[in-house]
Structures are given as structure tokens and as C-alpha cells.
Image (cartoon, rainbow over all chains, first blue to last red; front, side):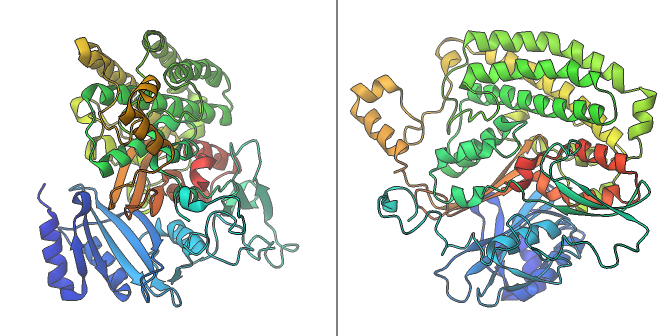
Length: 168
Length: 406
């Protein structure tokens, strides 16, 4: 395997400099954080670069970190280079009050449903998405249920102490 | 009500017909709604609506200890639940750094490949039913029963299996399980051969499926296809080979690929994969039989913090009692970490993206469901074709509503 995590990291740093941060490799997968304005530029660079060739979007989803003020929502991209069989992951963080992230649908047709799902559950507003409507939840829903402020069970119940059963 | 399902303006004067296919229609094999715009019998445009059986699995997972998430994974692709279960166990084991004894790996391969056969068997025989050939379905369906009996012997249930535990299996395979496996391995090839004789070179079936619902390799990759549907388009990507798990790298197998990505190629690729699965089961079974002495009784790894102790030990040994209590109450903290792990499920790459913050439940768990991702290509696949082609395209994609809607 010629394409190593170090090489990808070096190429990305050459191109984008120190805008990319938090380089880690949990369980062998290269992971970094990027400013949200750069997400399409990074995807395009990784797609076009003759060595990187990350042309398969494996997965796209969001994570909500309520305690990170100003960067509550993380959109996570998993990319796969099928010829060298290398995977990488990168995240962009966005403010929950203004959750605008550029849509990757122009580059990947597969991003269409994945972004709709992410919008449906986290409320990430993908700019440039052709049809950003709810996909799995009912259309009448007026909140984004995977955010952490919505606990799974009815909070008015007093007969059950949630501390004993997973997250409260 | 929503504004995007309503009829378009001027629909009375228009020359095309709007047809509502689904949500519950006999030809859709699941709860899918497609609003088709038809010119005579040709599909001009279609709009898919999904989510009818959404059950909030990702939200549920955020409150469950690891072992309680396994039953959730059953309900993704319920035609091959054991692969989903194993995929989840493998994810947990990777997170926890557990290595499994080889025998467990081979037993898992046997179960996973049986599940793959039962998945492909349904898909292919249903393609037959939808194209008007019912008897193939009856030929193969009885063999799913044999597979389910093997599951039953190992874990006690048939459809939603909840098979295996983190670190291995809940109990060793009994002799009856192996006998049933041998019976299946002896009888199924003959029947599959017969099935192939009925279909593979059948002129009517070929006319019906060749060129129907075709997709190029480039478009398939762009749409995030994985599994048999991608391989039918000519890309030899298989998670079992590219990111080996559960000792698949010890065994020999081929990756069948198609060329045109149409219904016929998907059908052939699935048939070929059943043969490969049979060969994999045989190889794994031979390896299982090679273990002698105490090695031949190993069916789980030594991970007391995650694997339930034997019940009789719970009554007599203090450590076993403590671990039993901690596991059942979900008191064991998961190490913090972030992991994407995937397996080759019946429909393609089934991925688990797990973020743990060190609590007792995952902080976030996302399922990469292959169905959900490739279903968006359906509109493009059926455009310009006949209505009846749309029906077999749908069944040959092997859409499983449970996986689609999670």
C-alpha cells in the first residue's frame, strides 16, 4: 500500500496549511477537523488529487456536542479510496444557531439522502442541496430529534431514576 | 399535510398519469412509496418517500449498553440479521481491543455465510416471482427453513436472531447444529443448481431482465453502491477482502463481478455469491473440525467484563456474580474512542460509526445502511423504463425496508 496516512496528511497540509487541525488516528483512521467553509474544497481536492483519489463517500452524519459553545454540531465525512483501500474521516464544526454547511451533492450523488437524513435529525442546513426536506421523520415535526436536548424518555416521569439506566 | 406529496399543478389537463405505487403494494415487498409519472407504461419521473417504519434506532442506542444494542441491529436487514449482529459485535470488540479465538471466528463465518445465502436466496427467488416465474421461489424457500433451523439450534430464534455475544457465542454449537449444517451443505447445492437451470439461460427471464435497471460502474460508485449491486456493475469491492474481519483472510474465495449492472447481472452475481458462500462454509467447517481437545470447546474469548459468566458460576463465585450484575445493569463503562467499522452484509457495506465518551452507553452511534444509500439511485434507474421493469428493478436491488428506515 503506497498511500499512507502520513502522505495524505502532508499533502493536505501543503494545500490547506494550518487551517486543518486536530490530526489524530483513532484505530488507524486518519481524522482531522476543518473549518466549515472549506469542506467542499477539501472534498474536491481529495477527489481530484491523482494520489489521494478519495472518490467514494462512505458515510456522512452529524454529532451534537452541546457543551462546545459555538461549535455544537459536527458534520463527519467518511471517505474511501477504493484503489489503495485507505479510509479517512474529517469533521467540520458549526454553530447550532447558524448550522449552514455546504452540500456535497454536486460531487457525490450519494450525499443527497445522507444530507437529508442529517438535516432531519440534527437540523444541519446544507446550502445548495437540491431537495433538503425531512426524510425519515414526519414532515410536521418541528424539532431535530437527535440533538442531545431531547431525552429519549418522558422527563415528567418520577417513578424511574434514569441515572441508573444509561444516560439521564 | 406536507407540500411535496401533493399533485403537481395542472394535473387535470396533463397527458401523463400519476400512479401511486405503495406504501403497501404487493409488488414493493416492503413499505416504500413511489409516486410515478407515467406516459402510457413508461416511467417519466418518480419520487420516492421513505421512512414509514422508522424506529429511531440511533436515538435508542444512545441509552443502551453495548449488549442491548444487538437486538436493534437484528431489525436492520432482517433477511440476514446474523451478519448485522456479528458486525456489531466486531465493532465492539475492535473498540474494546478483544481478540477472538480462531474457532469463534470460523463459527462466525459459518453463521454469516449462511445468513448471506438466506438473504440472496430470497432476493433472487423474488426477482423470479416478480418476473412471472413463481416455481423457483418454491424450490429455494424450503432451504431457508433449513438455515433458520441452524440458527434456532445455535441461538434459539429464527428471524431476529440476536445471535452471539461480545467476545463469542452465547453457547457452543451442538452436535445437532453441525448435523443440520451438514444436511444443508449436502442438499442445497443440488437445489441451487436446479434453480440456476430454471433461470440462468431461460430466454424469457433473460429478455425480461437484461438491460433493465442498469447502472454504470461510475454512477454506481457515485451513488455509494456497495455489495452485490456494485459488483454487478463491475467493481470488485468486497469488505471481506478489503478490510478483512473475523479471519476471512484465512479462507479462499472469489469475488464475482458483473459487467452491465442490470437486473440480470445482479441476479447472476448473487447466485455466484451463494456458491462462494457455500465454499466458505465448507472451508470454515473443515477448520472448525481440525480443533482438538480443549481447543475444540472454545466458543468465546476470555473477556469477563463483557461476556456473561455461566449461570452456575454466578451462584457460587463472587467474581462471576459481580460481573453478571455489572453486565446486566449496564454498569461497565466503555473506553472512550471513535471507531468506524464495517462488514459485508447481504446488501453491501454495513458500517457502524461509534463514538464513546467513556460512559456506559455510546455517545453517538450511526449505522451506515447500504439500502438507504443506494435507494436514492432508484429514480434514475427506472427513468424511461416500463412500469413492470420498475418492479423487478426494485426487487433486484434487494431493498429491505427495515434497513432503509432504521
